[in-house]
Amino acid sequence: MKIGIIGGGLTGLVAAHTLAGEHEIQLFEKMPYLGGCLSSYNMHDYWIERYYHHCFSSDTSLFALLKETGLFEKLEWINGTTGYFARNHIYPLNTPREILSYPELTLIDKAKLAWLTLRANKIDLKALDGIPADQYIIEKLGTNVYSSFFEPLLKSKFGERRNEVSAAWLISRIAIRSNRGVSGERLGYLNGGFHQIIGSLETAVARKGGCIEKQTPVSSLSREGNAWMLNGTRFDAVISTIPPQELERIGGPAQPHIPYQGAACMTLALDRQVTDGIYWLNMKDSAPYGAVVSHTNFIPQERYGEHIVYLASYFSGTIPCQLDERMILDFCRRFNVSEREIHWHRMAVDPWAGPVYTTGYRSLIPGYGHAGLFMAGMFTSTNYPERSMEGSIRAGHEVAECVRTVAKAAGDT
Image (cartoon, rainbow, N blue to C red; front, side):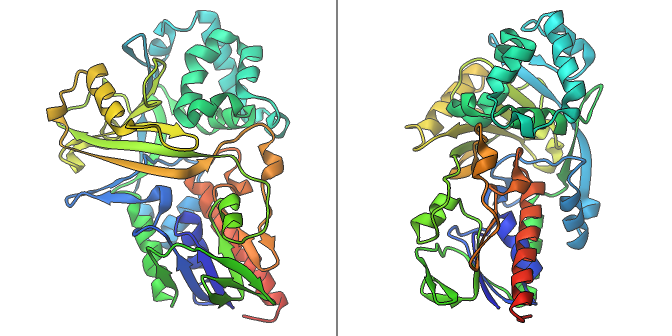
């Protein structure tokens, strides 16, 4: 079969890697680089992800891919520290003592929070799909626990749409991040950067005869007999990894629209760290970013020769005006940094960064196959209720297996 793949993110590359060699593969990526949200900047002396990344101990499909590509030995496990910026002050929240001394929560609040954390893995997420996260937390733990602890987390991930998010996402988030010790959360990172996964997949696809076309957006898709025409070229099957509504815009079938949000992620480099050694700092105070992610408070600064910081923001529709300038000005003022101390900065913007897991989201998830047109990506069931590298890799494998099944039924190997 001749198979066209729309999108060179992790799902598209995994599908291409799985099917190349068996079928004729042609992958189309609109950007000049591959990887999507897992793409990286090449800063000459090192690589750094455009959007902060780490993995979890439950990411078995990721580990299998790392073994297959010869990268597993580079996977390392490091404690990732967290904290909150509240009332113009940094509060670390890692050790029992730090949590007990956090002034935004009472002792009763902290006991309720500990109770929820301990039982998160046992809660039925399906039953929470239609319940708003804020409503659930307020009813179970109280208004103060929500506003002082969970609202900053929701704001850092979903921005102004945080009140639409289902409790299923929030509880899954608590469950997946429960691998904690007395000094922080155990998180995985690939020594040298996750760009190595993307590079290995690109090389493997090419080695098996697949074709990858960068800077080639797909502008048209149409059905012609038993085949699909993609940018005027005939394909026996097409795999799309872009949002269903974007696929519909270029000629794909009508599907329920998945709620999406954009991401604006500022990366900057400094001579010093400014978040008191904390890796992930949620902003309880109002700011033009929801979190400050100090990469080199997680990965040793010596690997880069400078401190790397992300300022994370999400938006709906169009990006707020002059957001990059507002981010830098606010960061410098709030953390007592002179703009002269910033070695460089880059702003990554993706208007389709990922789904917003609103109430009732489960009913919107499309199936993989539709008359020779297959869909998989961040919107797939493997990425619900928590989008991740793991979910995107699984989506790539599963959609590839669907294509194989169709090919076998048609007698085409």
